[in-house]
Image (cartoon, chains in turn brown, blue):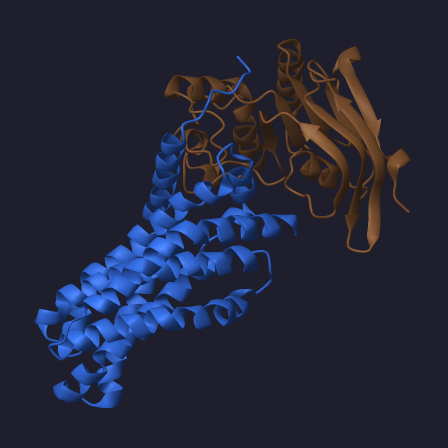
Length: 200
Length: 231
């Protein structure tokens, strides 16, 4: 099982006195696409953050994962005062040091060609989301942990993203994302319904 | 293609320092406000204490240091707030660079824009309080080091309180007591210089503080940031 990009065994997550999720077991291999599904407040984001090791104090159980992780959370980690190009170039995760051509290519891929030097604060919510997701089109990590990647995207944007997921999985990467809507990812998508792990 | 490239820590630090400096240039109020605060408070003292230059120069070391301390507190209160809100802080924690190193570029940028700037213009403020120009080198040197230690200590408090609603007062309660030794050493250096004594002992103490702070504070800041991200 050394090839697994992420392996969680009997993971339970607490929020204060309440047990949010219990005995979550998940193994993500290269080529996997996983959707974490479940209603509001069930703990999708908490689980994803524990996978990212951003939350660990109230998480019990075994978790091992590769170091090569890209995480895109609810907040887009963009600065309104900088342009999309600068936001990607000086991104705090520093996962890669992209060249300007790579950045322009990534922005074009998410449909933002021509906006490279606009102020990020002036972009619409969907466009900001696209800038954040342009990181997926840069050399950027094997395991992707994405929190609600489809939020605020239009139909075309969702299609671009789904295509990118499939390409990433085919190249030996893996994606774990949370979403309410069912993604059109064909037979490659596995859905983990968190309802079965609901805590006491 | 999907494999991330190895990242060079120095390159990462340089790009993050640039990022923070760029953000400060874009919103200059964060740089200018603490300086304006410093200037305004310094202007108030002669009005309150009377314009007698002798009396003012006697009090000048204490006044300058207390005001520098307070303007530093203003900077620390803003330190990680924006980055926590827009998710930059969690991305920083995801970087494959130890978090204790990854937080340093922001501190460096903040210090360049606050401590360094303040130290360089402090002789002018000193003159306004009747401080003779001969002690300007000691004033600048002591403030250069003092502001660096205060920023490092303040960042520990800021990292711990950034997730707390209205954590400003909590931050002040937490770190002001820690500033006391710096205040004593700093004013001591200035007083020695004013009275023709030897300020090197006090300056050396400040230097030791900077070294110790650089070694230990980043570890505490990283731990504080991790705790704040859990909330």
